[in-house]
Amino acid sequence: MLKVDVSVSSMFYGINYKNWRNLDPQQLSNLTVSAYNLLDTEEKKKNFIKHFLALKKLYTIASPHPETIKIKDDIRFFEMIKKMIIKYSITISKEIARELEYEINQLISKSISAQEPVDVFSLLNKEKPDISILSEEFLSQIKEIKQKNYAIELLAKLLNDEIKVKMIKNPYRYKSLYERLKELIEKYNAKILEAYEIIEKLVEIAREIREKLQEGKRLDLTEEELAFYDFLLSKGISENCQEVKEIAKLIVEKLGGYVKIADWNKKETMKAKIRKALKDVLRERLEKYNYDYISEIVNELLELAESIYT
Image 1 (cartoon, helix red, strand yellow):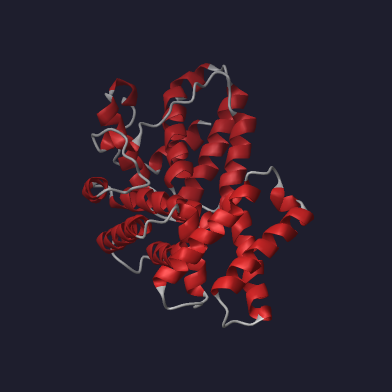
Image 2 (cartoon, rainbow, N blue to C red; image 1 turned 30 degrees about the vertical axis):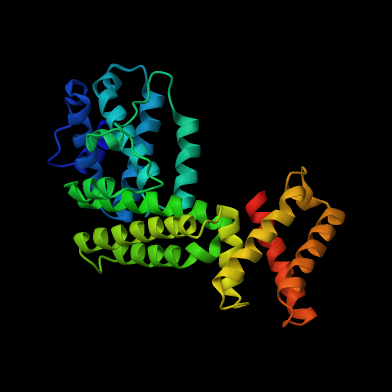
């Protein structure tokens, strides 16, 4: 067990974490981020997880042997690093994350009180921001974090989560940003770009997300109306943006009565009524298109409506 502890400890060579219990929150935040920053590749994260789980298993089996008391604080510190990997890392695979959570649920000992890692926002020395807005102040402070690998993975994780949520309702507005982010993450993993270049490009994506959100407000469209607006634009149904806005608003208005009904998307009779209502809107406003084309658009609109309202 002690050999495995030494093996895990060696991954944080140069980091003095033995007295972490005596640190204040700001110092502990700096310490855990510095330790995390040393695990700067997916392979290092996998290796840490593998050895940490082995160590934790041995610790659980050996408790309450006196030797386990010597490394109890080590286990708690490594647990904080593990939680940071799960929370912030965008390189670790979903399979590993699921396996890790399963193992931890199986192995966690009642003798170990899992220590929560200090929240990143204490490192930034500020109250938690509204990260969905990704303000310039927040982005500036992210750029100032000295541990660049950590800064990259933190910001990439925030952007990834933000875009995924937005794509559920409006894939047409955010899909290109999601693809750019994925490409950038791949370049980060392959070490093609320098850390400062990655951070700058992540900040650009954050600003574009904010701009896309603000555009909807400038257009005076709700989130739902904006999703239909973007869909209709992607289909090229009209070059007149005002006309597209009006159609989007009309669609939301027509759907209003239906979407309030529980499980409307599972009832074929209700979906048939919605499909007819959508057809009526498009036929009235898009007279130049034939029946088959409108039917095709209506089917896609119905799918979009299901993703928006369910």
